Image (cartoon, rainbow, N blue to C red; front, side, top):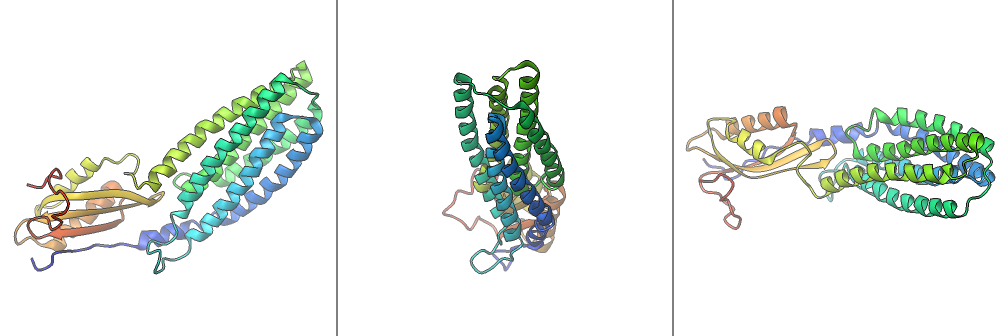
Length: 314
């Protein structure tokens, strides 16, 4: 075998992934405008009625508007082609935006908890009628925005972050409606801060999940639901020409964009092109990995500085 290294690349998925990011851009822009207008309405309504639930939801919507703006910028940046300095393009910006959005939720939750405790200790008068009207309008707006974003957020950390913020707003609006009714019907002033605390806990749980997901991708961890040992075993049996597979690394460039690098040791006089095709087919069909870089080792592993033992190397 004359070639010490053989590389198989497929960059098409990177550009397809980036192009896909542009499809929800119009919806993100519309969601940003709606959220910003509703934020202003809730600030006015919350200050007028004296409702913490409305002010908390307005504060959430302020972070929300920023999250949607960042998601819009992230979707636009992801469409930029690769260049000399960033050979993989800008797709990972969506993960960075999702990570920042998750962190911002922790700050918001801290503020809500502080304000809620203060209100429980020193309750004030609340205009339940104004609070109820604004809360219902906010609920309808959040339902509309969430419906627009939901279909695109399944496998996109950027849009998942934006959807998380909108979901938090939706929960905040529900809490504001319930609190307004409780105050109007029963005079329970404590319902406003208590329901705000409940919403903050729900937001905290969702924010933690998004933080873990985006952080895992940024650390180039193995994609969720994938077992490296299973991938390696499958590759060893992909073709009779393959003697061993080691130095396997699997990660995500961005959400939904899986990549792999590995060393493949072939039997003597084996067809390297046949082995490469088999490896690519297994990785694509069984594990959804489109971008693959394979190094063919003609005998002993060439990277003596690294430990090839422990990877199935004889």
